[in-house]
Length: 91
Image 1 (tube, rainbow, N blue to C red):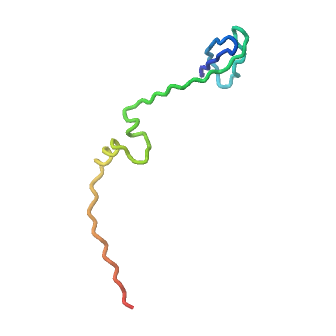
Image 2 (image 1 turned 90 degrees about the vertical axis):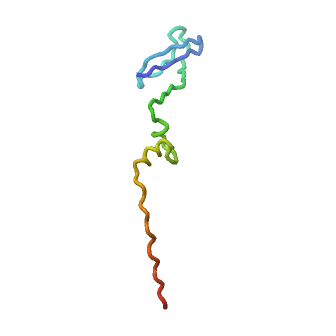
Image 3 (image 1 turned 90 degrees about the horizontal axis):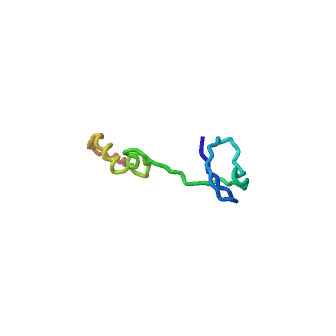
């Protein structure tokens, strides 16, 4: 269940309440019976992992770290011979 932070508009008291998503928002301050408002804060996000930017980021091209790993496993392309030219027909 998420924790919501509220601030009273009258007495400026702040409180945190654990509520379900379906529970209605609190509207009355338990101290002074003033109006409560939800306070929205930034959410902390932590990206963990050894190759987050090198292997997981989908950009236009491959990164240098990802290219080094995949190019070593590929065999060299074989030399090709040019196709014979088409014969011209005389009319």
